[in-house]
Length: 213
Length: 213
Image (tube, rainbow over all chains, first blue to last red; front, top):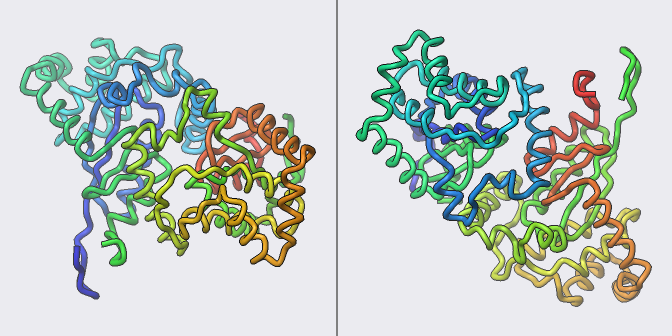
């Protein structure tokens, strides 16, 4: 990429890649809206599934279960992060939950104003209320609480066309080289982890430095 | 831990756990000194070896080699981080290097004023100059450049008593539940990753919040 000095760069959107079973995506889903809003940056919400990506790496479970030290650290870290952000948190008895249904609803609502509220409500159900987000009743409750037509949305979420859209999200995540959640992408540039929101924002505003072109 | 309101808390030191083969420990070894100095916090430098800890998790190589996507991300991320910090960086042909000898020297110099400079010079040799830090000649050069008695230090580094001190560092890392580098510890609290220096500093200054006790 070549850039003339003094030329105004368009601010690029940040793509926020999240998986509903991912603990660290929960505080990130709250922070990204605030941080991007202050910075005047558009957020594109990108639901995807980590399961197929983990399986490619040879994992049939969350690395937080496969590697107990990482898991112990993560649960303590989540307590701290949620407390620092003023978010309710309670370690769920079952982890990870099945986020497939919620991801299908999120893909369906990708361009809808209710999407961020839906996403945050699902994370809160999973990581604060101990509800099973794989249960259609739980997702229906969340949609109803947002004054949405739960039955209709759940039906449309399960239709082939919508399933295909979620698969396309996963293919794009794969093509970008995404391996965990949350991940922020700006163009082809990845920032992995909620603690890298600031770096993603800086990159979106400033672009790559000329040396890195 | 109980705390009376208004009582002045002593600021706890931050223990900086680093492994010489660890990429992300390089920019962290530069930043920790600056950040802690501004915050008025003591840093305890804690060299350790990741190899034995990785082997316990079933890894016989760096996860950045075992999981190519993570590796591709990490190398790009290192470019960005070093550029942002104004640090020289060049991806070494061989990764990971053997950090055992350097770790032994670091343990020997644990309470010496030259330790931080030695540590940063080893990282620069590895991740900017493409030198083999497992080669005693490389470590001798670094010590000599710091006006230290290289031959004597290398000899003392290899003595049983010093080897034992490094093993004790690893045992303490194990007991803390450390699983990667860099890690910052404050008491029993862990912060994993260079991007968490700020959180470690805040914790060292403020301690756990009363709710978390």
